[in-house]
Image (cartoon, rainbow, N blue to C red; front, side, top):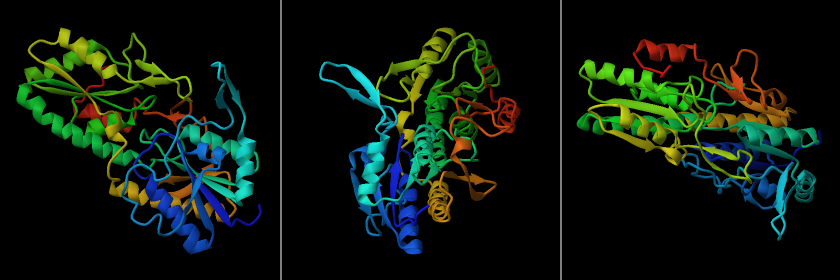
Length: 375
């Protein structure tokens, strides 16, 4: 690998808290420790394709660590290996434009990339590495569903938002003897609902990995009523589904890598319970994008900065084609080939996602506390 004198940074996929902390750490480490230049591509891979970037220096990244979102913007629609073109007559075709992106890098003297994102973004990072581009990935998703790392940055900040919301919802649930249904993100993996519900004192936790029945949920509500607890809190992942049904698709987005947009299962459940539960009003809240935004938690700030430092160290030490990861309180790295599209041995996975283990320790602890999973 030729000497690296200039690197590009990409933030792809959905935004989350901690992205700016990684950008800050990558930039400061590259400049202070290695004396190399840094640029940031605007709107993820789209910026790489359009050669749209900004210079990242010490002044540009000063004071951004705590801010949510990303100063580089983001996009989850621009797969350069399968890029969407639409003609004037409405005809749609897909082309591989990755070579254009590589030529843009060469033209600007960008020798390597630090790519920050989830499964889709890191899949393209792997594909660029296969074409000879030195790449290091940084795992990011609020769902905490990437394999090969104990935790992703952004997850803790999202949990903080969920628990804060549950704390507030508890007061009105108690005051009005209501059943409150709170929907959170989690397409395939229920980590947010599981740990958010556990920390936020939910009475029922519904996740994709454990299909539910209405009867079990109603039984839990009746049990609480019999104990004099005349209100109940139900937290449900957007990807949860009943035993005799399927996920609830909110809309289809044709130009997105994830064309099926989930959401609304909580409202559907609310309407069903309202017809079946006596003596309670049933109300629904979807936390939606509140989970993605806001000030970055102290844990995510620390983790994101450690990831950023490690990404540059790994790249400069010849570790291209790797993803930095958090394992056993230590930052290490693993091959992108081992991460994308599959989990390591022993990890429950679906379509590459790291799943909650239905018989695992956290679910077991929640059940010991009397929390129902609707099963």
